[in-house]
Length: 377
Ligand code: SF4
Image 1 (cartoon, helix red, strand yellow):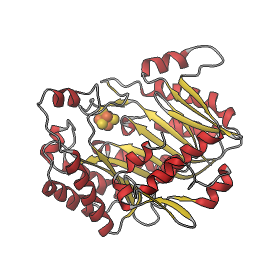
Image 2 (cartoon, rainbow, N blue to C red):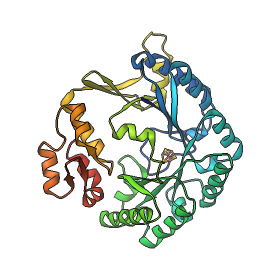
Image 3 (tube, rainbow, N blue to C red):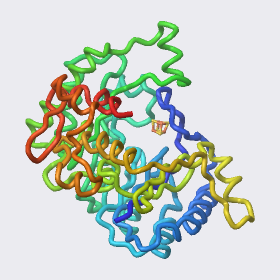
């Protein structure tokens, strides 16, 4: 099963903590961008022949702004056999209005990933978001009325000035919405962002890494207590609602990424290909505007051999709290995932445990999840 990811690189404004390749433009070239994505899709489809598309994910940027999203879905249906198990659109709460929601449902979109971030109005202003907490509450209600039965909510933590009491209030409000899925994002200060520069200049205080760890523990405890399964380091779901598309990344599945800065993964026999597109949307248009037969907008291409594939599958698989099934891994990669220096070191540190059937992170490992992953990279 193939997953298709489509990146939409436009936003209403550029948030001061975000280092994604996004453009805040008054005039978004909706159809021109859709045409470019359609052309990239047509060019890429033959190299993925024989696959059935099982998931479609519109990410960004702010794809809920995109008026031409339907033409891309049509094009996917024309290029590939499709048996959609999940079609997700990332949505700004400001876009959750009845007409758009009904339109998305009619297009076959069945899951929304809503960028709530926090329910603290002051914190929302401080991080430069344009929506307000009431927009999330109204938007979720409107999405339910339009028939969306699968909603995911993004929650940020570690925000400037945040303390545990504020986080608890955020969680109270989040839980009242009864979303099927929750994704967590700890605020990180990325170089080249205004937040990074303000922090360097001593004008922006953010919680320490110890406080961040406390926040993460509190979130895990409260979401688990409310019946959510903590199934991946940063993701929680009601039973039956684990993200299908994202699981492809953690299980080393195939994904075709379309649009500026999108990443792809394709298997060719024993090896695996990873490639990414140019970051800038202007470069993307320039590549796909050419009249050549090969208008590939690739910025990078890498072939990974069997041992590298096994290593990738290991650290990606460990992100899931169920871990890795040893027999399935052995069948796929020809070796036991519990072997090797990196895993032995993690076991010694008490971050990973090995049972007869599985390899998985311990509770301590989950708290230090990104460091566990880095051991393999
Ligand atoms: S809306 Fe999201 S993608 Fe767009 S600038 Fe803000 S954080 Fe980045």
